[in-house]
Image 1: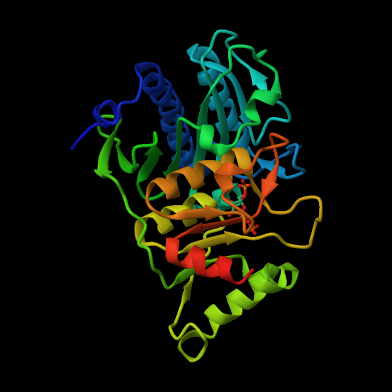
Image 2: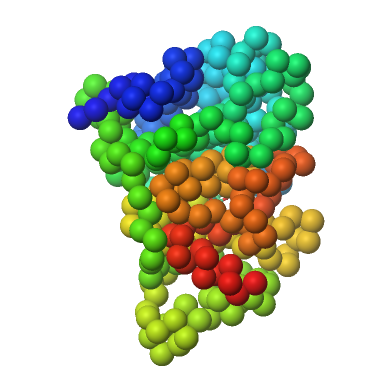
Length: 321
Ligand code: AFP
């Protein structure tokens, strides 16, 4: 089986980017190990702290964030990082050529039930003019990313990665510690009969989203004239992995709960990297109002509504608005 390095070289990735990706993945392998120890190492449960988004931090959120922060700060390749678990941008090497945004442990409410979780990341070039602790350089649309990926800590530890030449899936071979290519150029099926949404928020959705979901639920007897299945992992990384593997539409749409936060998911380190991966696999990623990757960020922790998945189904959903 092909190794990660060899696929990245075939895709024309520059050597420094390859080294940076290997650094991130070294951190993810350590996270994978810490996650797998679970209760034996006392890493489950919550801390007493909250992150900048007002969410209680899990012990594994803090551990994973520290692992990635340390390894990236010491690597020399990175000028600054932004993380879900850091209030502000963290400056690293003033001469570093890259910026990395990450959610160190997505789906952390799943840690205590031994369910799917993962690390999501996105990489852009660092502008020369930028001071390492300047957040403004992170405020670039997703189209500027040079690489994005996630590592899913499930029954296998898997990597989905794009450098803009398709999306490839790798599996961690724990016997030698390397990621091996297991699906090259994965393609999201254009049509689907599976959707993914937290239905408990239904009363807060905009009317057109309520109409769209009710037509899916009406199944064969409704206007779509086919039955749909629903799945919800409560970790975007798990839901998007399923969409990449067998199609579907994943939605966290705008809702009326907090008018100043139009969606739940964060643009820089959740929506954009997933949009890049899914678009490179032939799917679509939209806010309901335009392409996710074209949104100009105004804040490093900005939230956006998200409709991601099979091209035909995302297009159908958009026709309801
Ligand atoms: P964390 O990043 O705090 O772990 O939250 C996970 C998440 O942002 C995303 O991965 C899920 O799709 C979503 O939250 C699940 O939210 P609810 O099930 O609470 O609606």
